[in-house]
Amino acid sequence: MNGELIATQNCSSCPIRHRAVCARCDEDELGRLNEIKFYKSYVAGQTIAMRGDALDVVASVVEGTATLERVIEDGRTQMVGLLLPSDFIGRPGRETLQYDVTAVSDVTLCCFQRKPFETLLMEIPAVQQRLLEMALDELDAARDWMLLLGRKTAREKIASLLMLIAKRTMNQDGKVMGDVSRIELPISRETMANFLGLTIETVSRQFTGLRKDGVIDLDGNRIVRIPDLEGLLFETGDDGDGGTLF
Amino acid sequence: MNGELIATQNCSSCPIRHRAVCARCDEDELGRLNEIKFYKSYVAGQTIAMRGDALDVVASVVEGTATLERVIEDGRTQMVGLLLPSDFIGRPGRETLQYDVTAVSDVTLCCFQRKPFETLLMEIPAVQQRLLEMALDELDAARDWMLLLGRKTAREKIASLLMLIAKRTMNQDGKVMGDVSRIELPISRETMANFLGLTIETVSRQFTGLRKDGVIDLDGNRIVRIPDLEGLLFETGDDGDGGTLF
DNA sequence: CAGATCCTTTGATCTGCATCAAGGAAAGGT
DNA sequence: ACCTTTCCTTGATGCAGATCAAAGGATCTG
Image 1 (cartoon, chains in turn yellow, purple, cyan, red):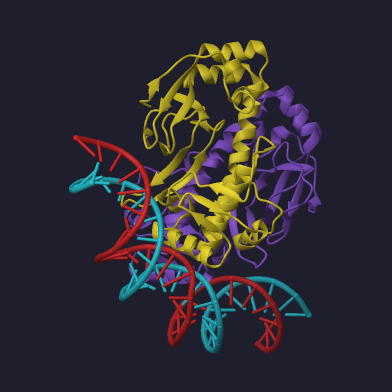
Image 2 (cartoon, rainbow over the protein chains, first blue to last red):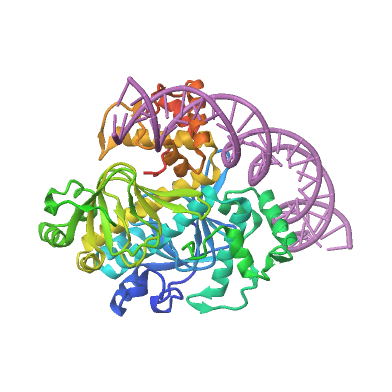
């Protein structure tokens, strides 16, 4: 990782402490995490780390969005993880990174040297427990994602992605965050394509298709209006009882 | 879960203890796990549990193969997990099951009531740590699987599956287990199709295609001979430095 | 503001896999 | 051994999405 080191802050001021690794720690444990942590920031588009890199740092996303991607030699790329604030990068007990990590927007990471972090892990069960919870949540999300990649049509894939973004716009930390019928796409057509296992042309065509069918309105190419959320949900092929994808 | 209760065995005789949840426990901790565990067995094809079922039991696979699947209302089915001996079913802290669980072969499970298991989890860090390790391994496997589903061709999917089975035939618990050039497929064409996001017809055609191209030999429809493992690896589209898929 | 670069859309065409349909082979039951 | 059922293969056809190609729109730069 080659991002710029910005500052060492107190963990109690860490904006993600309530959901990230330290969510269950007491003050003493927070202090111990503080001793080994530091912040790094990256600009949009920057490569944070590449497959094969030595994994001597693990980190939590504090701000911004990053992606995990696997790439085949001929250039085919599949996104395998979308990292949002509080998500974790790297895993204890592994020496090298398995994926390319890229900053989609400007990103700030809260980093820990892996070795001392692993030591803390053994001594603070609350962190271990929190990591297990996060890993299982990600596993559920990955499995919903596999259903999407393996069995959904292009239109269903796009609709699922829109629902996912709509849900997140609506609901952040359990708080309703504003008008669901107007959502802003935080990622480019190419990023969507790599997320969904499609080409950018197909993504674009599906957007115009959904617009022509009156399911969505487009305002520029980053703002989507959804007059009828139920109508969109119907397009996803989901049964409505809610997957756990993000 | 409606399998037949067979016997309560001592955990130290549990055939999977070296890799499963109890891998890191001392004798005292094993004793505590023993108090709450019991075995159940299922016959090939039997449904072990269904999406939406109350998750009051978690379990380790002792013997046999089971699958996790997600199903859309119209019948489209995607396998999202292949459970082999030592793999874990269910997750602490969740009330209902997210997937259909089916026995592919005859299956024996080592079960724990979820509530007391969760209590033990808080008290025995070794189990917590082992679960985290297993969850992270599964997450890596799921991500390789996503690359396969999203970006690989039918032929590459089949080749990847064959490599996966070959690797496992070759290497079980670090021990070389016999001739790699002759592998037995443990699953039907339909199961493969649901694994790979294909139809059974396409799976079948790809097998005949690989045979006609001399990449594999078929002996019946469950025995595959691979004269040239490198040749098969080439077909997978992988770069050879090894994913972690199972 | 002109030029360059990047992102997105749209069109034309192609193709890999799905779908529909039928027949063969294996496995299990009586 | 025969019937039934399930699994697998093969063929014919169709279509969703990829590919190839080109032309807007944005955004950035000097």
